Image (cartoon, rainbow, N blue to C red; front, side, top):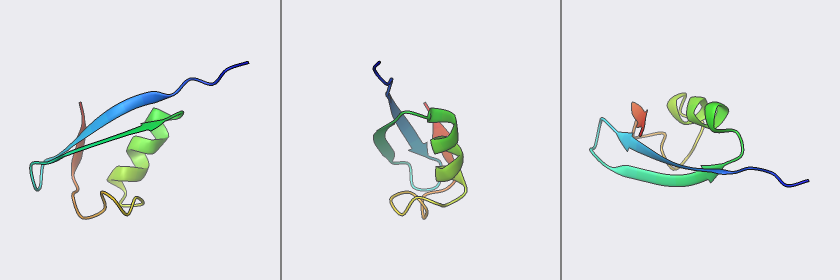
Length: 50
Protein backbone atom coordinates (compact mmCIF):
# COMPACT_ATOMS: atom_id res chain seq x y z
CA UNK A 1 0.00 0.00 0.00
CA UNK A 2 1.38 3.41 -0.89
CA UNK A 3 0.79 6.75 0.81
CA UNK A 4 -0.24 9.87 -1.04
CA UNK A 5 1.60 13.11 -0.51
CA UNK A 6 0.61 16.58 -1.63
CA UNK A 7 2.95 19.34 -2.69
CA UNK A 8 1.55 22.65 -1.51
CA UNK A 9 2.34 26.32 -1.84
CA UNK A 10 1.48 28.87 0.81
CA UNK A 11 1.47 32.59 0.14
CA UNK A 12 2.15 35.00 2.99
CA UNK A 13 -0.25 37.94 2.95
CA UNK A 14 2.03 39.65 5.48
CA UNK A 15 5.39 39.63 3.70
CA UNK A 16 4.34 38.66 0.15
CA UNK A 17 6.48 35.51 0.02
CA UNK A 18 5.90 31.89 -0.95
CA UNK A 19 6.53 28.70 1.03
CA UNK A 20 6.60 25.30 -0.70
CA UNK A 21 6.51 21.93 1.05
CA UNK A 22 4.72 18.56 1.05
CA UNK A 23 2.43 16.67 3.41
CA UNK A 24 0.27 13.56 3.56
CA UNK A 25 -2.43 15.53 5.44
CA UNK A 26 -2.85 18.81 3.61
CA UNK A 27 -5.85 20.12 5.55
CA UNK A 28 -4.25 19.56 8.96
CA UNK A 29 -0.89 20.95 7.83
CA UNK A 30 -2.52 24.13 6.53
CA UNK A 31 -4.25 24.60 9.89
CA UNK A 32 -0.94 24.09 11.71
CA UNK A 33 0.74 26.75 9.58
CA UNK A 34 -2.00 29.30 10.20
CA UNK A 35 -1.98 28.63 13.96
CA UNK A 36 1.74 29.43 14.03
CA UNK A 37 2.80 25.86 14.85
CA UNK A 38 5.43 25.75 12.11
CA UNK A 39 8.74 27.49 12.80
CA UNK A 40 9.23 28.13 9.09
CA UNK A 41 6.02 30.17 8.68
CA UNK A 42 4.99 31.33 12.16
CA UNK A 43 6.12 34.92 11.49
CA UNK A 44 4.45 35.02 8.06
CA UNK A 45 0.78 34.68 9.01
CA UNK A 46 -1.78 34.96 7.57
CA UNK A 47 -1.09 32.37 4.90
CA UNK A 48 -3.16 31.46 1.89
CA UNK A 49 -3.05 28.01 0.30
CA UNK A 50 -2.69 28.43 -3.46
